[in-house]
Structures are given as structure tokens and as C-alpha cells.
Length: 291
Image (cartoon, rainbow, N blue to C red; front, side, top):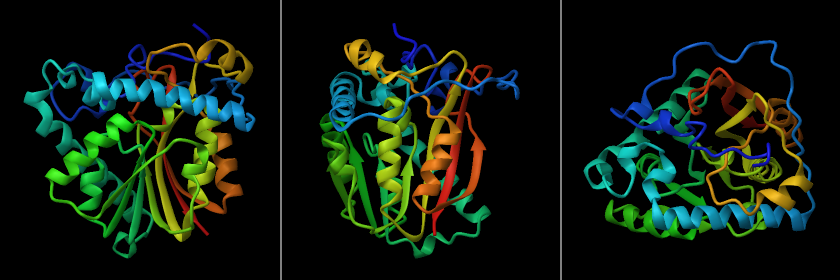
């Protein structure tokens, strides 16, 4: 396996999201990543053909997961696997309310009034777990995903919830991420980490430029892991053949650069519990605002 990729299951990657109960969801105790940790080498530039190859690989992996283990692919707790998920579906979908509540708390701490938001985009909407709770609060919600199988199930779930203010969009290329400057808020949680760093950077660049002045982006990205590195040529040559869930990292300095270039101020950055190995990994939740 290339050092550029790591199976998310090995990293205990999304399990902190499980709402209650399972062992995988318990907070990780112990030391956090040391303050003197050295930098990691991560290439984030790629040509258009290479970027499309990265996105196509991500789509293939996640569409398969959406068919085989849709709920577990979103929150990697054993109770959400197909064999047992029926007993836990209500818990799965209810957990999105907590994610939206945390988003609102970030806004409140920074003096941003969500009552003025008209149009909110969730990038990586999955099965609609968070989308539903956004749609219950905001007039217009756009849910985007690279996986057609997830989108189909999200559409059915949101219809069953009686929600008529959600537009679902499939992402096939980076051009689909681009669009008019019509967004008041962007929400993206446990999504970007499953894209190679050049794709993460390109997606963020496109999304941030769609914010209206005063609009905000609330997103989570793993920003460091001891021993991680990413080389574009190596990954394109060897990494794309893998079929496991990958975990990738985009250094904070690159995220801050993308924010500056898009005319965004950093309102808040928090270390979070979205990754499982806090002794060797760092994940951050960001709140940015477009000037």
C-alpha cells in the first residue's frame, strides 16, 4: 500500500460520529498530537486529466459502498452495517440533528445570524442524514454527492420525510462543483477526507468562490497524520486500483491559502474528534466567512 493512502477502517475514521452506544463511537482518550510534530509532504497540484481520474476513482468506490453498505459508509460503526442497521436507522438519521446544532453553535460564537440564510449547500450529502435537518431549518437546501447510489437513497428518504425544499445534485467532475455565487452557507462533514489532497483542494476552491458576501463555509478536514505523504504521480500509478475507503489529509497551511485566495476570513478553527487516532492524527473543523 502506498503511503499516500490508508484504509479508513484502520484509522477508526468516522466512528466518533456514531450517536450512542457502540464501542466505536466512544471518545478517544489519551495524548493529542504533539505540538512539535514535523510537517508532512503533500502535493496538491494536478492537471485537469489527473483531477478527473481522482474524482472518478472516488465515485467508483463510493457508489459501490452505497450499494453494499450505505449507512456504514457514512458512519463506520458496526451497528450500521446492513445485517443490523434496521434496528438503528432512526438513531442514524437522528444523529444529523446534533451536527446541525453544532453548526449553529459555531455561528452563534462568531456573531453570524443563520436566520438570514436562504440557500445552503451540503457537499457530500450521502443518505440525507444531515440534509434533512438543514432542510427543516433553511428555505432552500442543495445536497451534492459524487455517489449516485447514495443520492438515490437520499432522495427517497427526504421524500419520505415530506421535504420539498431540497435539490439533489450529482457531482461527476470538478465543473459540477462550480456554479453561481448564490450560497449563504456551505456544510461539509466527514466527506473531503475521502478524496485525495488535490481533489480536496480543488473542491474547496470551487465551493468557497460560490459564497455570497457574508456567506459562511462550515467544514471538517483531517489536516495531519504522522507518516502520511501524498505524491500525485505515485498515487495515479499505484493508488487508484485500491477499493478500500481511503483517508487523506490536507495541511492547515494549504486550507488557509485557499481561504485567502477566495476572499474568506477564518472565523474559527477547532480541533475535533472526527478521526479516531488523536495521538497521531489531527482533524479540524473550520468556519470561514466570505468578505
